Amino acid sequence: MDSMTSKEMKEISTMPVGRNRAQNVQSPRTSAGGCPPFSIVLLFLFAGILLSSCAISYKFNGASIDYEKTKTIQIDPFPIRSSYVWAPMQSIFNNKLTDLYAQQTKLKQVKRGGDLVVAGEITGFDQYNKGVSADGYSSQVQLKMTVNVRFTNNKNHKEDFERQFSATTEYDATQQLMAVQEELVTQMTKDITEQIFNATVANW
Image (cartoon, rainbow, N blue to C red; front, side, top):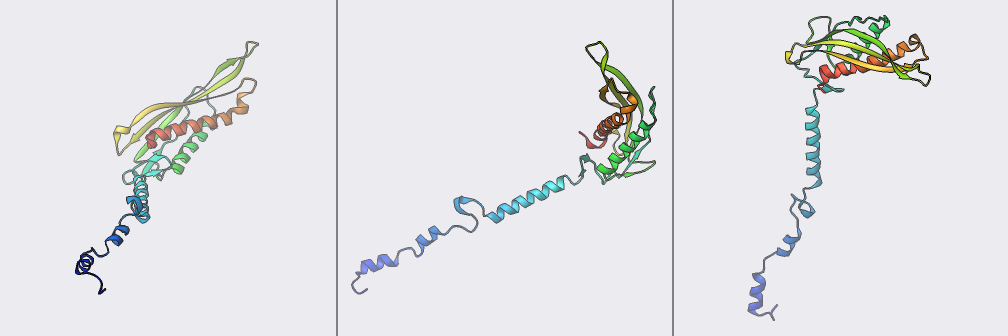
């Protein structure tokens, strides 16, 4: 120390203390490369998930319903008004329709005064020759089921409508209709009731 000149001592005393150390210490607010720390990323990710879950709070298995306003639904039995009548078709259709709303929504089903009202009738149950075999006879028969629906939304009458929904299926002409009728009606009923459901509460 005694051998240092006064000029060298002055240069040492004026050197910035801890300068190099400060340059190597990163800000606690950022990680390497200027990115936010992992904990902050997780926080934003959690917030995004929370907001998304809030956005679909009024959706239930595909239905888009404001349950604060709409709480009940009235589903009137659909009678058969077609020229051809197969009696079990009425109960198959009505049961499937009521079950669909019960399983896919939280709406309470009531006999009268519903916030939503679904009514109508089965208007068509027809069969047509579809394909022709090599011998000139029909090889396939097409079966068509048609349902007329009147929908009333007592919370928003702009959504009211009356519309027809239909479904078709086919069976081999060598079969008797009575042998396949229940299976085919069940298939068409599933198709039509899903169409009605989508048109009334799913807004698709």
